[in-house]
Amino acid sequence: MLVDATNDYSTPASGTDEPTSSEAVARRAPGARVIKAFNHLFAATLQADPRRPEGNRVLFVSGDDQEAKTMFTTMLTDLGFAPIDLGDLAGGGRLHQVPAGPLLGQDLVRLSDSRAQ
Image (tube, rainbow, N blue to C red; front, side, top):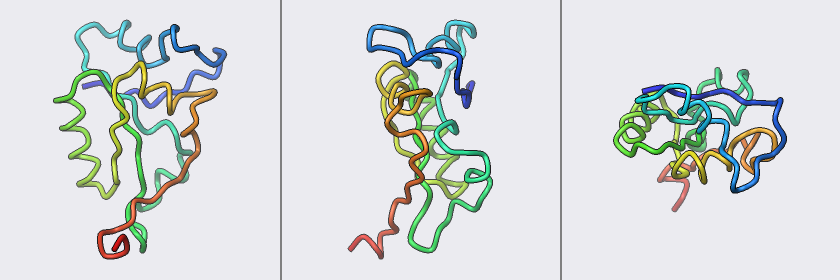
């Protein structure tokens, strides 16, 4: 499994018919099960404890291999994050990629069950 946490600031916002940066990474790593994650928040935010008093910090995940995403999101949950699967690298990846992904910089917390009621 290859986790792409990069952001390509050198390219303009990709249109829906252009490959995402993670699709480009996947092409450069044939056979790798590529997952896009850890790229929508700043490093200082990521290094903080993801367990907040009100719930757990959200991390967005996208990828074309469902089994790899399941394994990865289980690991993220074990680390205290609240992963949200956005779908494949093309559609989901576009939502949290630089420069125009609408989820970039969104530091969200999934409320704990006791707070959500």
